[in-house]
Image (cartoon, rainbow, N blue to C red; front, side, top):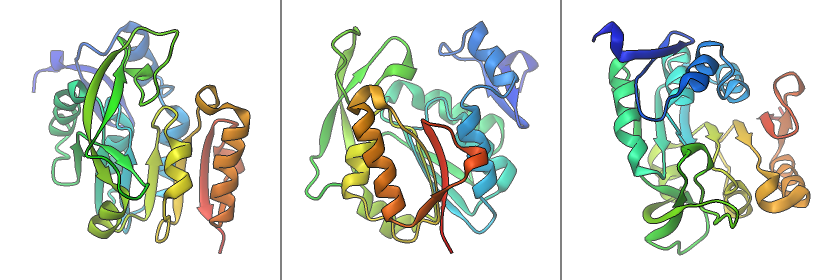
Length: 228
């Protein structure tokens, strides 16, 4: 590995150069501000006995930091944007994490009889890409394969869920069986489904027995664990 290949570093995880990094994003990663709430939550709730499901890998930073620092049994990440996968895998390889974390190009759906593919709307900034079409943004539509959440539960038996899927979390929670999951770190996107939709997401988590960790949560990012 060449030193020039490393663009940023956060919580001992090196982030390789890629077209998705600019000066501001690099500075945010170095300062621990990029996805900072999600990272703090993931580090707090994950331990060596856990199996982690990450929905919405993005650049792969959050999952990699969790995998490298907390050393769970396994992390399986899903990312809808296929263009990001080579860069995510490069990050895993740079940090020698291939045996602990993997990424798949698919959208996780929890509803029964989910379709084989779904439309995904890619923006120039990967951060805004979403299953939801945004009328005020220029996007390119692609078809992305799906993965059934129930199949993933049977395969992985996840105990921790990390979820940042740009507005898809309400539809996911409405049908998801969260049995066996003891901790959730989730970002809400009220711009996609309104304040009422965000409240519904939180109500679903509460009804499933999850309690917000106040010191690690904000209005739009919750770290929550099941009440004992």
